[in-house]
Image (cartoon, rainbow, N blue to C red):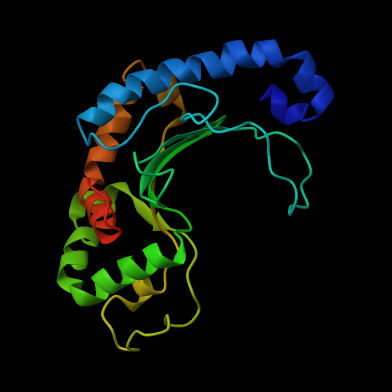
Length: 214
C-alpha cells in the first residue's frame, strides 16, 4: 500500500530493505509451503523460492509500451510453472496478492500459436470431452473463465463447430477470487491447493492438448 502511494525509484531504493523483509522473505516462505501442497496435485509444477528464475515475479514493471510509467508493480505475483515451462509454453498456476484483491489463475495466458492451435483442434475434435470439463458444477461455481478472444472464428474451423466461443479464445485461463482476509489465514496455502485441485480436470486437459504431462 505504501508503494502504491510512493511509486518512484528514490522511495523504493530508500525502502528496499523493508521491501525485502516484509514482502520477499514472506513470499519465499509461502512459496516453499506451496511446494508441498502442489505435490498433492501434480509433480510437474514447480515452487521455487529464489529471485532469479523463481516463482516470485519481478517487482519491476515493463513500461516500454505503457502510458503508465510508474516503475513498480503494487501487487505480489507468484507463478508455479510447469517443469517444461522454460522450453515450452505450458499451463501453470498464478497467485495475485494486493490490498483488497486476491485471486488465483490457472491455465494458459497468451499461449503461442502452435499451442493454441493444438488446444483448438482437441476441442473441435472431441467436443464432448471439453463440454464435460467446462460444465462441471464445481468448476463453474468456483472459477470464471477469462481472457481475450478473436472477433471471428479462427481460420480452418467450421463456422458451426461446437464450442465456437471457446475456439475463438486467445487465452485459456480461469480465475477464482479470495476474500482479502484469507491472506492472514495460516491455512491459506491449503485453501489455494483446494482451489487448484478443483481445476485439475481443466489443467489436465490443457496439458494433454499441448503434449506435456500432468
